[in-house]
Length: 236
Image (cartoon, rainbow, N blue to C red; front, top):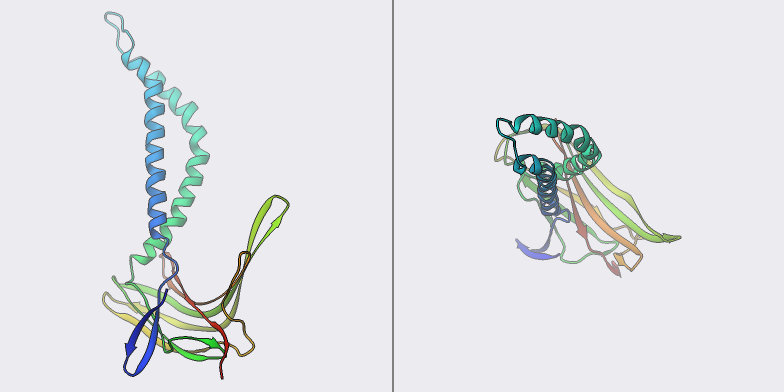
């Protein structure tokens, strides 16, 4: 995750975004559309094929048979697919939202002022991000949270519970950003002295994240997480 940079005389650390799901969303949307097209094609061929290839008497036309079979297809087959279309459409909408939001902004940068972090350390986090197109932003929010993830079993089912404990929150008022303009700010953060370090186990995780949310007016919101790894040592 970590990539080090030299900023003046300070050795800093760049964090990589965690929410890299746009390719998964695009693959799902493409697969769903291909599946939908193949389903209609196969069903249509199965129903209309006999009408198109069957024998026709002299002076007769295939048109009445095609019309009758077409109505049967629309009345009997299409309604049975409506629930699948609704569910698929909802999933496509949810998956496309972050992709659409990312299309309006450049790749973000999150730079920490320290190479390594321990429990009790203070540090500065600098966030910058440019805009690809003009956009009306209602607000920008940056949070520093401790995320607790617990996986447990109840009977034969497995559940995952996620809780975010916010230790810092900064909200910036909305404004208009034009193409090429950039948002940038530096905030002072600290790992609490009585806090917990990063902990990863099979069923339990404790992770620190800097979360960024850009609320666009009349447009899907942009959200990004940056994991901050905290060592188990105590700061002097």
